[in-house]
Amino acid sequence: MSIIIKSDREIALIREAGKIAIDLFKVLKEHTLPGISTGELDRIAEKFIKSRGAIPSCKGYGGFPGNICISVNDTLVHGIPSNKIILKEGDIVTYDVLVTLNGYTADAARTFPVGKVSDEALKLIQVTEESFFKGVEEVKPGNHIGDIGAAISEYVRPFGYTLTEEFTGHGVGREVHEDPYVPNVGKRGVGPMLKKGMTIAIEPMVNLGSVELKILPDGWTTKTKDGKICSHYENTVVVTDLGYEILTLENKE
Image (cartoon, rainbow, N blue to C red; front, side, top):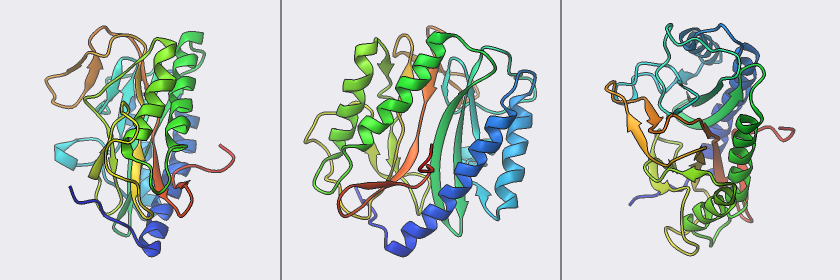
């Protein structure tokens, strides 16, 4: 395992990429309406990212065809944008965004409601987001990667939800995916030690029902086997002297 410690200059560059992701979510939220296709949302994202001089780094990564991942309802991750997938009232939709600017990448995801959704769906989105903040509170020099997953899972499981162990967070910055893996289920005191200058993507992925997943024949789209909804919340985080800074989140969010 080779964990890259970033310089202050590199962290500043990742922060700039993160600002584009922050602003992109505002644009996508405005367009998250019944009747729009995920293909159109993907084109909106591509145009916005490129207008800021950046690259939508999902595009072509491992052969992925979209500019961002757009996952609806029971799709947990890696939903391929399509003109045939039309958002409807009551859906929930996750945008997973990778932005590369001047060679440095920020990674973030948000799940949004489409119109009026069930209380059950709103609660799932809320708990997923809250679990990220429980996890990120463990980020400081001397703590371990396992502390993050332990905090996330300890928060999520009492609600009766499940957390996948097949997909995890990860290091990010110089590359889209770097060491270390950052699982959402973990044991305290286990895993690599956190050090100042590490940049990691923490991304709880929470299922309403069973933890079991299936990948469609396209090789990307990952759905819950029981067809129940799921939610995803992610930010890029840097370890600082005393704790952390979230590089893909505005203070007022």
